[in-house]
Image 1: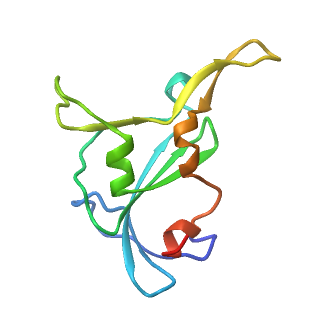
Image 2 (image 1 turned 30 degrees about the vertical axis):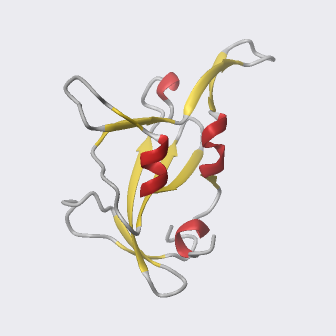
Length: 136
């Protein structure tokens, strides 16, 4: 974010699931939650983000990153709630999960590999303009 010139502020503590506050082009501010998956996990779970506690919040955004897929997704709070699943039972009841990737066989190598599910392609970004420009 800093390399792309964003005006980013980082809270001293993460009590409210806010990893960054960003000043937008119009002078307003948004709150951002960052979530990342490294290559240290099984590639079948390359973009699985689970057990997230979240309720609808205005001016709140998620940035998800998968190192396996080298892919970033940006969603508003409302988009996240609409696209995620909420656990109905078990130890994580009420928490949300989103699984951006599926698995498929590579036609050339015949090996199974992760890919971005079609319904989540609209959230894929290559920069952070969506966060800084209210019209983006």
